[in-house]
Image 1 (cartoon, rainbow, N blue to C red):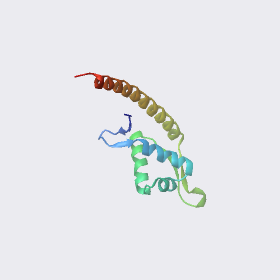
Image 2 (cartoon, rainbow, N blue to C red):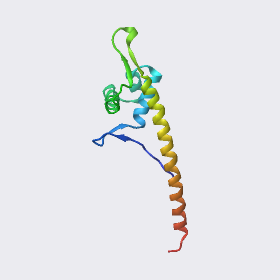
Image 3 (tube, rainbow, N blue to C red):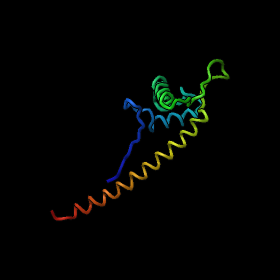
Image 4 (cartoon, helix red, strand yellow):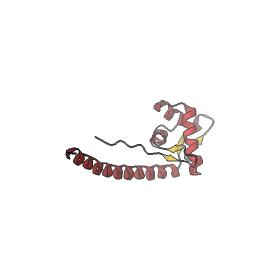
Amino acid sequence: MELSTKLYILDSDGKKFMGAGVLWLLERVEETGSLLSASKSMGLSYTKARAMLEALEANLGRDVLDRKKGGADRIGATLTPFARKYISLYREFQSEVKAEAQKKFEAFSSSVKELMEEKI
């Protein structure tokens, strides 16, 4: 047996606005310098990727992308300083939650093993 966890943060209506997919999208924007390139590399439509980031921004009340519009020198997007810090905090939170879940799972697995060895 092994544990697999998926962690999402929900808004007040119960809709996901932060999870691994949004995290990966932010990281790809950082790598590529473009929301379009990031979305293509993930197999997402640009519209879907934009909606994901707009939902994140709406729920956080802060911009996560510095969007550049127009001419050849102003194409693309970069992460805001807030977004970079948010990613770091989210990764730390995610790691801690998963580590704690793994500890709980190991205790559960041990109890199940003992139960299976009982002659009931």
